[in-house]
Length: 202
Image (spheres, rainbow, N blue to C red):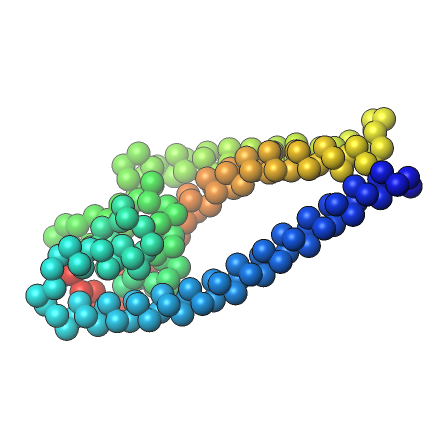
């Protein structure tokens, strides 16, 4: 193994350690953020419950802050957090909002699929296409390494190509995976039933 290849491998290793450090730092920051989320959610929900004269603007902004999304409506958050596994339900609603909606009728409120996605095959083909594209982009991302035994290419060149193909095709693979998981999130949420009587905006 010549000096050039050793240098390239060291560069890749240093980059990996840097990414690992960033991930650890982000995880620590996430834990601190979760404590702040808990404190805010507890104080806000108590305020809304005990202060019936709170301005609708403040209520909506508070629920949007809980969801960390500006597009979401207060009544949607209020209903979703009354379902089974409220934290996961809220995350699923945010992920799958393109496919679902909050329906209100004489029987009350419920999360249902939008009309376009009510037929199961509409959702099934989206999941299938997302999965196929995900695997295709994963193969393209790793193609320099997978093709190494079959073409004339040294390890150093393969590593350099991987530094290009993994970010480019890896990002497309992630997008396809996200597409499929959004549909799954919507399907999970539709199946969940209310278990809490703590709805505030009735």
